Length: 182
Image (cartoon, rainbow, N blue to C red; front, side, top):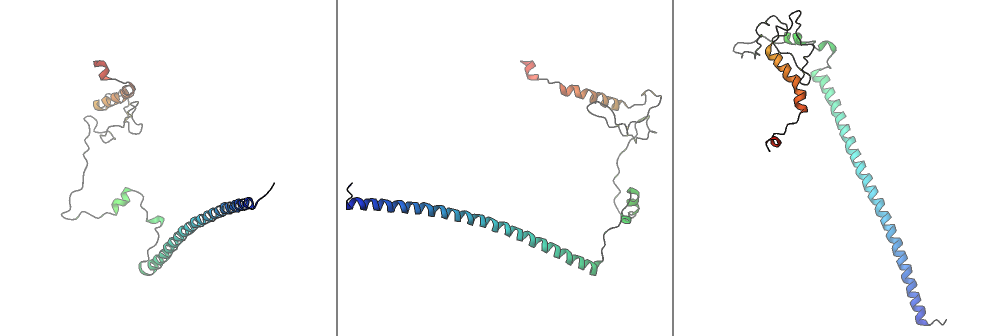
């Protein structure tokens, strides 16, 4: 094997190029690793800035609450409500109202008509609530008809109960009008 000077030069250049290529690949990998670290650090910086903003807002809120408390203690003297300050119902609320002044508009009134023959009932003339599925009236609002056999019932109420009872069967049935015509 006879190595000439030109051959040694070419082998030398090839080896130099291989070493330079390996160093370039190594340097590229190192640069990418540093870029990844920089990106992670930037994400942590953003997170810390958000945390700082949250803490600043919390601090300002608490300092404003403290300033408001001091202002309240010095100027106004407001205190939290106690259990004795709450009212129990509509009657106590109405007792707090003022009498109607001269020239005030009349209060809004709602119509309430007693059905014929049912004027003495305690339901105030309102129809009982009826379930649309099975037609059963609500137990709390059904008037008691002892021994009357349902003769004092309102015909409108009976019609509503029949419609409600038939609602389930009407909803379960599918009628296609166009198919019947063709």
